[in-house]
Image (cartoon, helix red, strand yellow):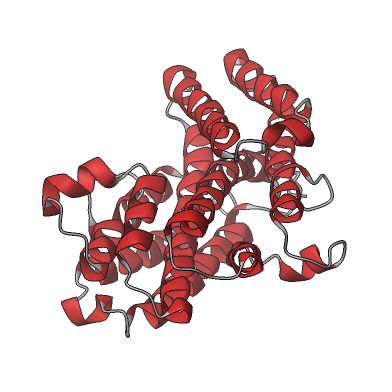
Length: 317
C-alpha cells in the first residue's frame, strides 16, 4: 500500500473518533457545570479548553471563557483544527482521496455527515443546551462505524482505519479522566457526581453497574475505564484492538518484521502495565501521574507508527 494511502486511512479513523470523543468530552463538562460543585462559570469552560490542550489556539481569537464562545469554538470553528467541523471535514478529505479503493457506502455516509454538520447554524444549536446536537454527532459517528463494519473487507485498509480509531480513543479516554481528576482536586469536591457523569458520557454506566452495582468510587471507576477487557471504551480494550491491528499490518517500509514487532511490543507493554495495576495506583493521589504516563506512551506509539508506515503525505490538516 502507498504511504499516503495508509496515512489517509489512519487519519480517517483518528478524526472520526476525535469528533465523537470531543462531543462526549463537551457533554462531561456541560453536565458538571450543572451537577457539580459551585464553581465560577468561566472556570468550567476554561477547563474544557485546557482538556483539549487548546488554550493557545482559543486565546488567538477570544478573550473571555463564555459558554457561547467556547462551544462555538470547539464545535463549528473552521479555523480551529480540532473543532467538530474541522475533524469531520478532514476525515472526509482523507476519505475522498481513496474513494475508488473503498466501498461507496463509506463515502456516502461520511459525506452526508459533513453536509449536515456544515449546514448547522450556531444560533440554533445551543438554545436549550447542546445535548441534542452532541447526541446527533454521536449518532452520525456511529452510523459511519456501523457502515464501516458492514461493508469493509478485513484487509490492510480496515486495519489502518481501526488502528487510528483506537489510538485516538485511548488518548481521549485518558483526557476525560484527567479532566475529572483535575476538577475534583481544584474544587476540593466529593467525586461522586463527577464520576457518575464520566460513566454516562462514555455510555458505560449500565456496564459499570453489572460489575460494581450502585457503588461509585474513584478507584473503581478508574479500574473500570482503564482495565476492563470487555468494555469498548476502556484502555485495555483499546490496546487489545491496537495490538490486533498491528499484527495484521505489513511493514510497508521494507517488508521486514522489525517495524511491526516494535509496534506490537509497545502496545502489548502498555496493555500489560494496565492489566497489572495495583489498587494503590488508582487512588486520587497516584492516578494523575499514571494518566500523564499513559498519554506520553500513546503519543510515542503514534509517532512510532508515523515513522514506520507513513511519509506525511496524507491529508492530516
